[in-house]
Amino acid sequence: MSFLKETANPDEMSPLALAFVGDAVYSLYIREMLLRDANRPAGQLHKLSVQWVQASAQAKGMRKIMPLLNETEEAVFKRGRNAHPGHSPKHQSACDYHYATGFESLCGYLYLKEENERLSLLLSEVIQSFGDDEGAEKS
Image (tube, rainbow, N blue to C red; front, side, top):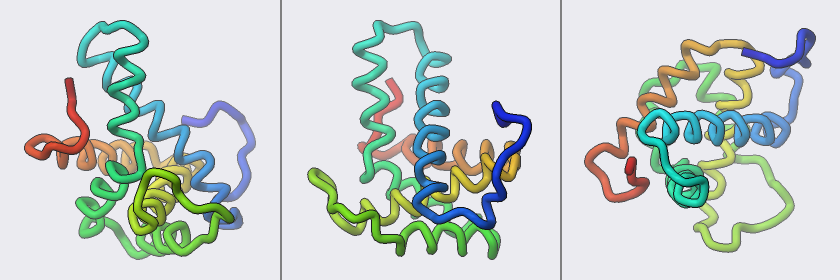
């Protein structure tokens, strides 16, 4: 789903531009998931969403879905992972931060390509990967 009728070609975008969009896409996905899970106060929803969208959680999810990626998706991820954002993470490891940037690049790419089913499948796998782990909590 794209809000605009005409979108730029994601194949021609920088990985950091894709990550810019992908960050919002993933955040919206998490917020919708949390809303569907239970009706909670906004402050509690925000606190829960932070657990899911922080770089360490994104990196963990990315590592879980790596075997599912096709060649193009893996290349997009690697371009994002290897991009140099011009600043260093404050509360995350550099490795997790780079993996998270690659993950966000992939989310942005699939969103802008309007590959919604594929994006939804991969994000579902990320969410399921936390089912038995202590990372992001679902409730």
